[in-house]
Length: 386
Ligand SMILES: Cc1cc2nc3c(=O)[nH]c(=O)nc-3n(C[C@H](O)[C@H](O)[C@H](O)COP(=O)(O)O)c2cc1C
Image (cartoon, rainbow, N blue to C red; front, side):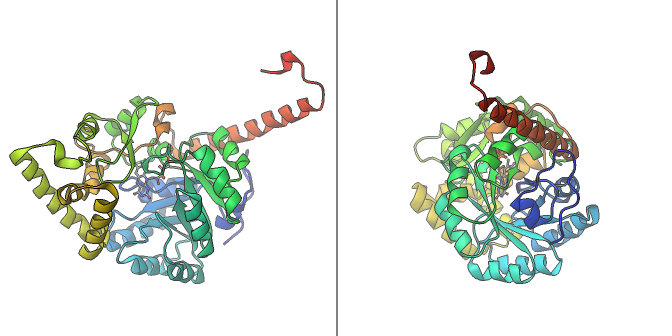
């Protein structure tokens, strides 16, 4: 991949900027229905790495999105895909044939898929939530990992970013991208101090003027406090960090092990379940996931979460509920994945303004820390300690 351009104000050079040929070590994390061509291109154009979220796109939609993004920016961008999609190999071939520089995966793909992409000159990245996943992916030849801590938005693990990132960075020799809770330049410096080579942000990029999400939805995020999110298993059986809304509270109150429609009764519940089945069928069409794969995932969910088949069926609604908020702007009906960091965000800058501010603050933070080191050279007096 080409060398990064001359560093801009406050820029830093890391193993990640060198691997990807980007200017700043800032990645926009994949967000279904949010990170399409407009957002991904805005981030890449500003010197970071934008990722198109393709799990919620058909193959034809993905092809169009790649074309659209490449038309908006000459800089490197990537595509995020599900390693378990039945057409993952076909999607990987499309990425390689369109010369997309980066492919990122929600979970690590099999070694053969990594090798095929790397042979085609595509940089591969896998998301991990635990050290052993990072070690496995590194062993399979992945080029970099995104380690996402428990404060992150969407599906999350249990280990906070401040513990996961140092652990993963010490365990693997490839660049580690820290994610979960990042929003500013101090966080970038903290991630570098923990041994990461850059940061990835989801919620912060959702809350930019370049994000396609409706203003009313962005306002709900802006209004949230630090206690405004909740990790629920009631939606799809696995821990999912979302904004705490009336609907989510109702799901959470729905009884032990209850998911989706379980808090309803009688005909309303039957109606919801029928709609869930239709939604599952419709999503199968765009996700490239076969019935066999969906059934396998359903069986895993039943085993891991103790859900009934009715609950599993309801869980298939997740993409539809996310779409209702992110695409249709339905804050009342929809599900809004969000990191805890929403509680610290109060503005909607452009991606270029955001990245510039992060890099400037990272530079000032490094200067401040250098000052702390110089102070250590002489005896520390009480008035020196602030
Ligand atoms: C609205 C939203 C949608 C998301 N959708 C996806 C997705 O489709 N696939 C995925 O792998 N991760 C998804 N995530 C998780 C992000 O990729 C990332 O891990 C997370 O946002 C990082 O934490 P942060 O929000 O604190 O920056 C989503 C997150 C948000 C906030």
